[in-house]
Amino acid sequence: MAFKGQQGQSQNQKKEHKPKWWDTDSDGDGIPPCTQCYLPVGELAHPGMQANTCVHAECMAQVIAQAGQLAEEHQLKSRFEFGTGWKAESVPKNSVIAEQLGCSPVPQGLCGPVYDETAQSGEIPATHEPAASINLEYLLLALKVRKVRCREPLLSLSTQ
Image (cartoon, rainbow, N blue to C red; front, top):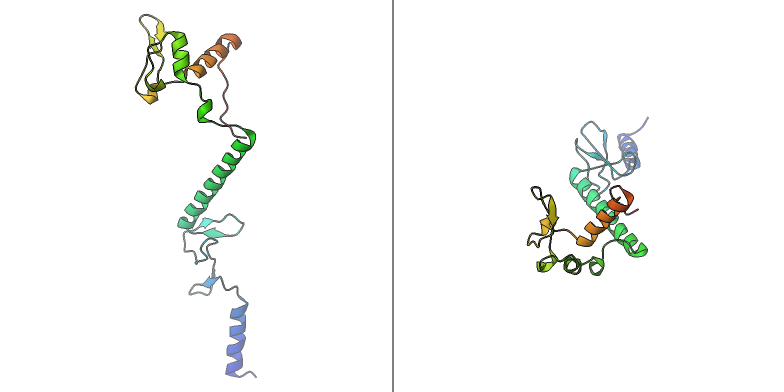
């Protein structure tokens, strides 16, 4: 026969065997903690990054932001490692090619192609609108591919 004090100790010992980072609801069921902030999650939770884990919506937003930042850092590292990507000094200037084509002076290096349907001709006038401008060297390269290879130029924006 056990004394009341001993029964209380055995119940306390059982509670100590539960992981301290789990809370229980009114039914005694375990409530898993958020793997980011370690607070108990409610009824609405997102699956965590590891199996059988969950996170709050706010914590999931932080996880996604951190993953995006890590991916961006990895991309920048590989760009520098392999020498790919844009460098401001390596982008061709429109003013040099515009002069060779006999175009009007190009303000701030901006110009864009315009096609006149009635005359069935094109020209490359200067523009002040960056959204309407185009890099002439890239345009000429695309036209050269079209003429020589008889197909559209292929372009890959993949970093892999």
